[in-house]
Image (cartoon, rainbow, N blue to C red; front, side, top):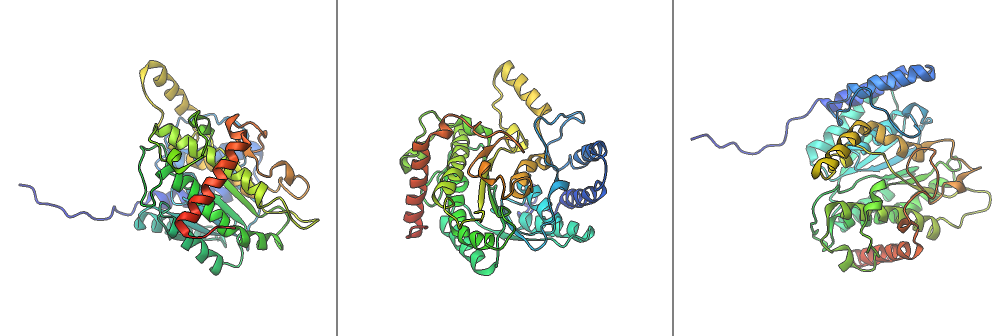
Amino acid sequence: MSASISPSAPPVKQRRMSSSTQAAQRRLSITGQSPDGRRLSTGSRRLSIGAYTLPVPASNVILGKRFRPENIPDLTGRTALVTGGTSGVGYFDALELALANAKVIIVSTTASWHGKQAEVDINAALQACKSTGSVVWHAIDMSCLRAVDDLAQTIVKDESRLDILICNAGIGQTPFVMTGDGLEKHFEVNNLAHYVFAMRLLPLMQRTAAFAPPGSVRIVMQSSELHRQAPATTKFQSKDEVNTITDETQLYGQTKLGLIYLTRELAKRKLATYPPGTVPVLIMAVHPGTVDTEVQKIVDHGPLAKVKKFFTRISAKTDEEGAEVCLWAATSADINRDNWKEYQGKYFSEAYGKVDMESKMAKDEGISDNFWELCAACAKEKLGQELC
């Protein structure tokens, strides 16, 4: 008879330390190189973190335009918050912002050992490359709206400024499940939690925008091209609708559609008025590209699906590459007081991409309005007050 072994926390993994430190060192080493030199350096960097991200062929070709981390301006003195910043794309969002000298607040639902490890590893990398940035991690159950609201209010109380909010956390393509709040989990975590974060943190960000460089205070919603997989019947008219059991890809796609609506509605309802001669808080929704979190869930039925899955993996991005478009939207100096109106409330499938390329449903103002009203009603029901 084998002896029973009591469960324990997984051992601390060293690969994160390697990923963070190598990213920091690579960022420093490519400064001042020619474009070709930067391309080659970045290519070897991708292979060096293969243990952490999805292994892809060395000849991987990344489609679309690029915004490399070394293009991030100096963020000294600025504060950013990244939800879901302990793994995947969000991890590299947080890492690169901190490498650019920002103070970064990471919020995640991951187990304490996992989140703390990310905090320790990134701070070690920052120290190694003498960055003045820092990272602090907060654990939170994003499927509990009261917990989300409490943390958001704590951040407003404790922080003197907030320059960047990246709403990255999310439930992936997983089966239907209800939360303790009586809501389908994809909707509550991917949509409603970020509605609460944005509404609670917006006053702090607006105060920051009054003295920060014009156009530098920004909110980025991590949407996806999989918003096109939302059910054709989507209307966001009631809790019963979002609580309807459906395919996991449709559940995920519906919430990514919701993030495009949330972006548009915040721009229209909360950011449309501002003092003359100033620039309001900017908000954009982005698609990270086909990365591990989306590739691994492609349905594998039949020979055609297997071929599609193979070629999708060949052209897939690593998590680090997937972070680039979000970092572009959050930091690029090419978005400024002269052209900000071209970006406000828009969805982008790549850095420097074209606007109005989202699905026809994503452009539906009626459904967008329904989504906003549903979020407002659910938040009021769970928190006992309207978020103004």
